[in-house]
Image (cartoon, rainbow, N blue to C red; front, side, top):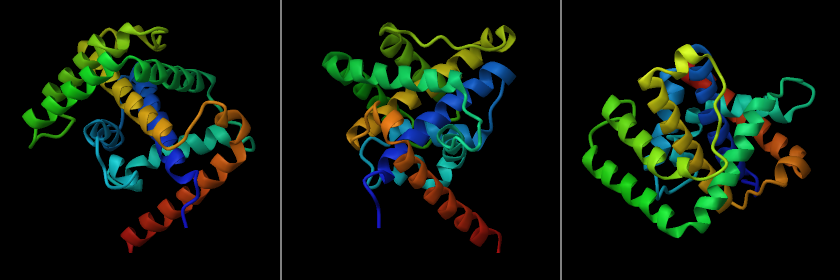
Length: 216
């Protein structure tokens, strides 16, 4: 039976996964294709039947759930302050976007147009990523505070990486919208740590069972 935290954890893991992918690009110049695909795919899932469907199933959030567990579980002692700062900023920007109805409508309209024009394409195709990056640049990047991505300038100056980072940040915003819609609030990250952790661990156990059954 699902708890009230189920969908919130999925959305939170979606944000974490997108932002971790941004970190990987900024630090190393690349990120796992499957992980990135799941994040970018979520941008086009505006009316899903289930929260899992936003990410193509719970398997699509494998990386996000594992990193979320590391951030919530004090026993692991692997919290990343930079990742958490990105997370808080994304949540804050989504709140500002919610109150800017003109910009919100523009983002939704542009995504709908892109979805229609790329019906048979995957989000990984360069043309799609460029268009997603442009949507982010023309809308959310004009809000304050702007997210300052830290990493190796060698990677951050490459056009393809810049566009990919922007597309992934748009994905983070999409998950932040879902987080709010599911009743997620910033204070829960501090005061409901244990509920979030229990749900995350439950999902990781389910994910492990799915992966195990697929190997047999």
